[in-house]
Amino acid sequence: MSTLTLVRHGQASFDSHHYDQLSALGQRQAQATGAYFKARGEAFTAIYSGPRERQRQTALAITGALALPAAVVTNALDEFGEGSTLLEAASARTGVPLIENASVSRKDKLRLYGEQIGLWAADAVRVDGIPPVAEFRAGIKAWLDELTAAPGRGHNVLAVTSAGVIAVVIAELMQRPSAELGAMMSVIGNASFTRLIWTRDARVLHSYNQTAHLSAELASAM
Image (cartoon, rainbow, N blue to C red; front, top):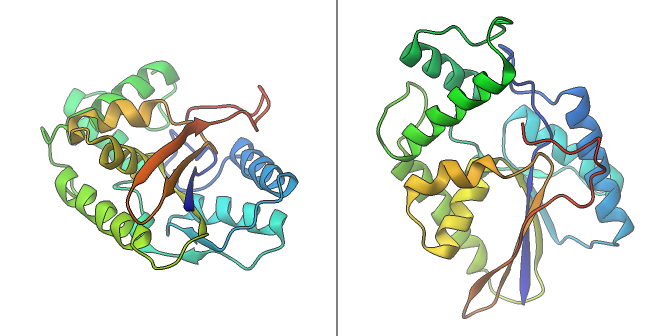
């Protein structure tokens, strides 16, 4: 039996032209996640990270807490798009400037952001710089298939990535349509972790969107 733990990055800098960096809260979330794994005595046999800055920063906080070498960076764990790109697409669709616009509430920005993701997941829109949902899902599936086909047992893999990747993994395990990815992503908290178990014959979801290691003041969705 082997284990894959998928960690979503800490809070990024939403509503900023430089979305792809951890906020101060995101840094604290990443540090708390690393401390949690250390306290549990987690013995990861491999640690991977997506290439985005927020993913690598989160992975660095975790490997630092565990006194382990830096994570192996792989494009297979990259998110489908940048938050700022999605906000710009939502602005173009609605005619409402969203990035760093104080006249629009954070609640409304998040609503329009979520709508844009939902449209992308349903393959109802194309956004420059973002792959179609089928292409994105196929890439994650290929990575997951290759990882879980690795010979031997007792693998304990940590992968630091983003909500889109985690949602695709869940959709693959549960055989859900891509149109549901947006809804799945919307509940995946910052610095949460999702775990699956695999054997030669099966892949099983063990836990989803675990955030109990974060105190109330550290918990956030975006």
